[in-house]
Length: 395
Ligand SMILES: Nc1ncnc2c1ncn2[C@@H]1O[C@H](COP(=O)(O)OP(=O)(O)O)[C@@H](O)[C@H]1O
Ligand SMILES: [Mg+2]
Image (spheres, rainbow, N blue to C red):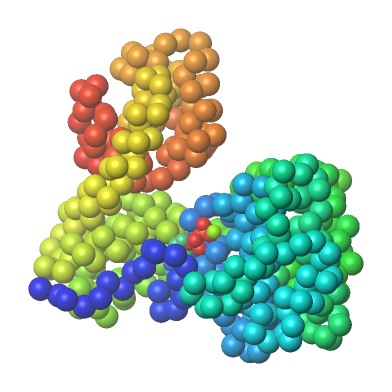
């Protein structure tokens, strides 16, 4: 039995040797961070590897002596939360090296800051007073932009250069719409000491935000982060398996075919495949099927919670899309899954897109699952309800 550590990681962000490829993307991000007032906007689907690429580039800049403020805006529920994320990232990057960082920050910001010791680093992390949350969103957003202005002022006073990363920045639009975009542009375009990298996942929203007549048009250089070259990824997976004592020719190719093109999905299936291969590889296709069953089992609690929250019609739409044979309006689909005529199934599909379960694609069915594992769960657990039996890795 092979007891070597699993060569694939999916928890959190990954760095080499768990991170592969993306040399051009990482170089462009690194250069932008290190060369203010450069500005780059990275966009691509979720789970493609944006955040990981940002972290790898940040690490390179920091090892070269530079400073990078990293703010993850993905969980923010208000512009105040975004300001706090930025303050946290700033204190991590600058708290130790800039004398009287917090005092200077508080004096320049002119808002009351609360200090909370970080249980891990022991550093005092500044946050804006909680009372700000009850103010109108535009006022709160003003504080967020103020923090950026203050960082620019502090960097200028020290003749320093700073990289600033705003991950999942499209939240800005969610809270403040186009007015917030213009407000942010107004400040950012004057910052000479900050190199900005914005990253976001909602590709269609971001394409709009970059369009003519919009605030970010021609201010940011756009960079699309698509799938890793499939040949490279296949080779990398097979090599990692071999180096870790579990050679399994064909595993990489099959994992990619089953998991689709999002890096995280592919690596997650490869991770499960390595576990399956500890006792030997055998037939790669059967191995990856077992690995898929393993991931589906891990997802069972989460998928059940999602499933129980859906209407019967939505569940049937998911079954029809998982079945993947004919469109939602085809007579065969309507009959088999009880979808009814008219636009009702399509309305359900749109609700499921909003929830992030489905996405629109160019195919006869017109929709696909966002996650290959959610699809496999529906195929394995919910298609039998309607008498359809299909192997979970049937594409
Ligand atoms: N270049 C890469 N090499 C290997 N694995 C990667 C790479 N990029 C992403 N991953 C895998 O995908 C996971 C999620 O990637 P992440 O950077 O969070 O994606 P995104 O920010 O686009 O949603 C990582 O934890 C890792 O398992
Ligand atoms: Mg991310």
